[in-house]
Length: 308
Image (cartoon, rainbow, N blue to C red; front, side, top):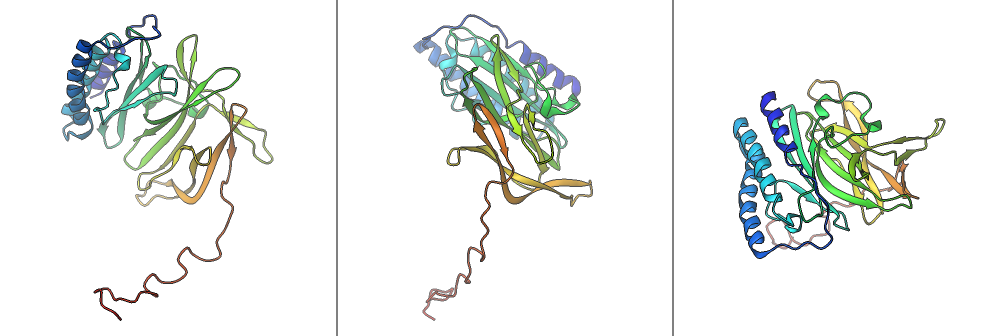
């Protein structure tokens, strides 16, 4: 199995063929038709990657997807084809559409997921950076590490936010990691481009806690029970990165403790290009529950629709 997964990663590497960028590329009608045909096949393959019950079929679909995607993206100006019918992979763009971020998930077994992806730059010919998931072998404090595309903390990205600063722009990318059967993870990574090369991780998350020197994180990584849903995303209404506050509780499966949301929220608030941690967002407390009276108290009809 590990040989098969290594082969899939090797297939992803061959996607990379950098060239110079062009400013105003357009798709020809012939290329549009060709990419439409590729999209049909790619959509079917991603569905099989996610939904097929047999591991060998999922692995085979993933390998075929990588090779077919490579061929499709070699089409001149392929960046301008959106691949909207590929529902089982994530394709994200920043507001200026200077690149797009493509990621997808491969279920290996109940305690192992692998992630695949690529960053395609906006260019006439293909300029691509394959993302090679090495999270399964990473050691140390992952929140303080810096990674390259060939040593990527793999995740299925579900949101991307551009952050503009006087020293240049960077991007927050929000991702999901299936991790293990009983434990899941979510991550906020920081994507920058240094000398034109993608880099993951930067000290933009600031924590200022009582009786402790301030410190920064290069990414935010949370782990929680597979039983629950956990929020970790940028909230446009509050203009903050909102996240469930997690507390450790005994696992019902006998594997120690795990984290559950307690109903309150933490956040990160943007100030001068950095994200400052807010330990608690909402402080109001209600004296009464939201429904102080039983729902049926003021109804004039019974459950059969007849007058009482």
